[in-house]
Length: 301
Length: 311
Image 1 (cartoon, rainbow over the protein chains, first blue to last red):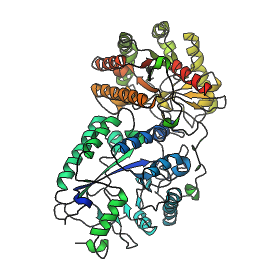
Image 2 (image 1 turned 60 degrees about the vertical axis):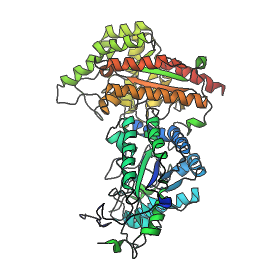
Image 3 (image 1 turned 45 degrees about the vertical axis):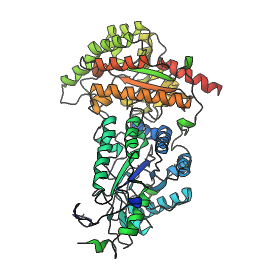
Image 4 (image 1 turned 90 degrees about the vertical axis):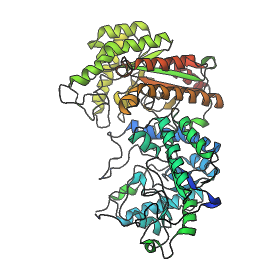
């Protein structure tokens, strides 16, 4: 184990050269629906239990399955209403289990990025060959079912190894959602030496973290999103910021939560200087215009 | 040492579910469900009548709401007992005041412990459904099938004898099931169960003795979950139920398909004197809506099943 994986350099928030988003927008806003499949009978991982209760954990499983049966459609209609595209954090086995959901996302021009095979299969304990094989499987599955090259990664259930980002870059990926250290994109050092960037994906505004871990009331979640937006929009005057709202339909799309969330989306959609982007678009724009010459190492102070 | 090779093998990576209990189906793509008299929202208020034993085994886990301090945990034992002695009657008074039909889920141990309580409930004529023996008889995957069968038998026999009702509904303590629970229930005359939370409508659930109906009892809208687990206030509870009611009514109006509001109520939570007013506010709100059908769980299942049979 190492003290730090040395993935990026330290840069103080108020000492950066300005980023400009397309159209002069102050803030790049993106929504990342997690579209996941959790297995009823997953194999055991030595470092993390898939379910808190003995299998079958009916309550845990059914809670997630609600998203696929009921929630995604509600969330899609809501994003449609405000002209927003999702960047899907995808348990890729869902392409096989529920191709109808993939079709609905495709029809909307949504982006798909890899969130592993299942959200009940963890990278903990994998050697490099195993993790590479899992990552390549996930990217191949996305390509086969959506016709898209997968650009981004969010490790399944946020399970990482020391080489996760190296392996994803070597497999052709360009951005990660796994790092929560900043409100702007950051160059990330990877073994391949290829351009690779962290795109901010907020855990603090992640609906599951908010509702389940922090036990936030539905209306307060909407208020938190508006507060975060106001601050990042204001700070975006100085240099473009990024705001992400990661969602899980099995949480936010419940009938007692969706309207309060909608009010936050409507608020954000009512602002002009916002670039409504996908994860890939933010990564590409940053890499094209702001990525340090000579790669992430050259960004070292 | 790497993980065993089968960790990267996915035998159930296929179209549909990763099990055979029910078919993959998106609610929005199903034929619309119509409730009686043009109602848009069926409301199932399930009132839990529970016994949490003081000598809790906690196998395979301590049930939510169960004992949590060293034995004898008189604190939690009596707080739960408050529901059966006091809170329940406040809840009933509130339900009756607004004309909302309750269904009672009963731990069978209540029958012998509190005959007067059972008499009172049975005399009302509201539906009674079974909820195993008590809150510490959890059904779980490491349980021997014969032991579980005996537990279901004892529960159903006791409740059927005591109530004179057929008792065709089931809720597992803590919503926990083994891989055998649905088969054991269906073989013993259970017709619907509320443990699978994955929908806002009933759906067909396969067993070795024919189909059950899954009638999802929302955990997200459960009073103990919102107030005791999430630590939201009683008035935030009321807001959430009102928001859910509004959302489901609007969705039903837009889609033309009926929806289900399934409220799980614990008298030891909402029956406290500082909370009962919030429950009354919820009931008043629901009662004031047009197009709401307050019904027993069985009536909702029957209305749904009749339409499936025709389809």
